[in-house]
Image (cartoon, rainbow, N blue to C red; front, side, top):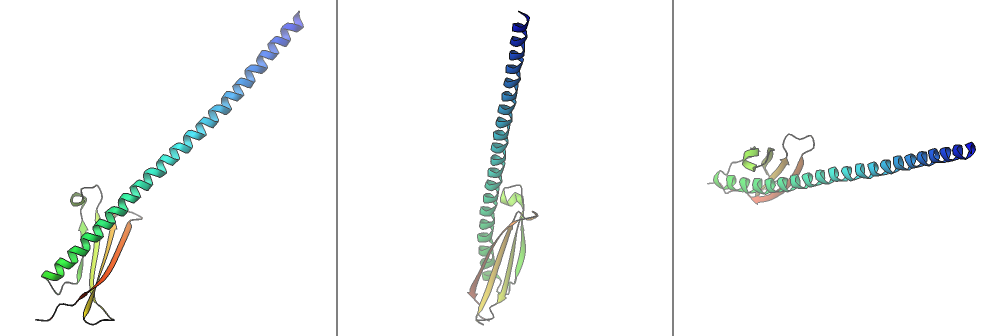
Amino acid sequence: MKSWRMNTVSATRSRTGAILVFAMIALLVVSMIGAAMLSMAVASMRQIQREHQQLQAGWLLDSGCQRALTRLRLQPDYTGEDWNVSAEQLQTDLNGLVRITVTPDPSVPTQQLVSVIAEYPQDATQPIRARKTFARPKPEAK
């Protein structure tokens, strides 16, 4: 009788140990899946933020081109500027920078080259930069 009880007790302990190992493996797998999902969510949020910054840089570039043309119309000797666009003006929490330069076109003496570089966010370690250069006729001397 005694040996029967010992076998039953050791079999029960063996099953309990196997169930515990199975539960630990299942917990490990679930934890790994959760960590992978969290990592994907963080990467997705970063991608969305980067796309937003690219859009903002594009809008700043368009605004910088319009600003350059307006300034050249009002002030023919305009050579450019660094335009700091505040977060308040952008209605965001980050500042932007638009660098405008106007130079004579070396290949066509009757034209000017307008170069616009937009940077957003301004103080980031890796800001998005959008660039555009276009030619326009030099204003006639009066």
